[in-house]
Length: 259
Image 1 (spheres, rainbow, N blue to C red):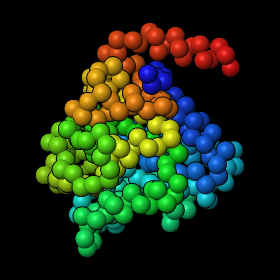
Image 2 (cartoon, rainbow, N blue to C red):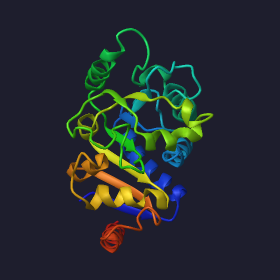
Image 3 (cartoon, rainbow, N blue to C red):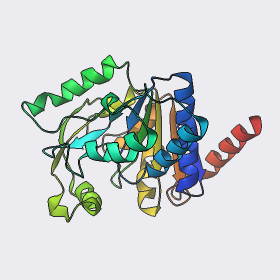
């Protein structure tokens, strides 16, 4: 069972997630971070930037790999994940830009970009801590329902629900790309520590299915049940459909008492 931490709000979630990540950075100055985009991890990045500044952490050697990128969107486009990662992670944290990678979604022979990315992750020694969100349909990264549990980085079509959810970042849903390149579920499973965040009532069904339903390609987020070190941080609303919610509170209280 994944470790489930139920929090008051996104700020508390961000503080907890950031403290976990700081632990990795303190023990390994060139740690490899797996970076998610979207609104869910913003409080984590804000708390992490504050921790780096307040604790004087040297992050110049830290490496990063984004989960995904839109296909056909140039890196300089404001909604490319290259641009988003730069503005929301690289600059606030003071990371070295050349050490932070995103999948290549443009250029010649783009169908080979997945294998290129897999080789780059392996060459870096693998991802130490992977930050994740979960979609309302249970997707993680851009692994839509039906994705192979053993999949690696590859080109995928985006589900209609995912495009609708991401329309807020574009002028309209018609401007949201139809395809992406994404780390696979197998790739994500190789990370040494998963931190999955979810907030709000719209995420409650996906959270319950991922944590307490069967492990299934129909709910890609359910792979957290198979991971040896998965931390799930959710607010009260996102946790509202969990059957074992009181057990998670008890387990968390017990950990706190031992500190």
